[in-house]
Length: 161
Image (cartoon, rainbow, N blue to C red):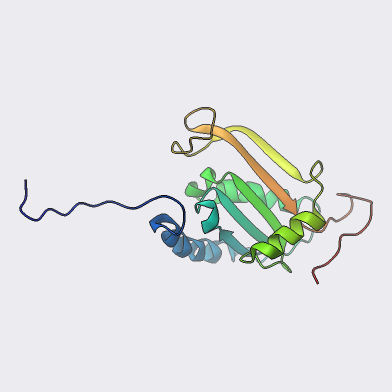
């Protein structure tokens, strides 16, 4: 009923949109929090993945199973990241901001059976219409790191060129 009303709203959709721009700032906050643990080198909530559904974590891997621990850390570290559906963990020689670098790590350092972690019936964003139940769905973690024994006793994985 006002003469010059102000309507507060945000534009959401395919990035770049307002949430993805806000996510750039959130990345920097998370990086500062995670840098207290020197093994986490870089974190990126990818704007192309609509910000929160996709995260890429670069770690300095020092022990077997560390990539899975990083996945669980993303899903539990900050409350908002419990809604992240896809977590990709790469070594610190991979640029988490370069999608070609991340895809190279996935295709050369990952076995689809050994290196995929699926989590069922876990909290998910209510606005995620792909989930089978409102607020409850699945998550996937991809370990695209170089494997250490006993993760594999097979060939060594290549390093980036």
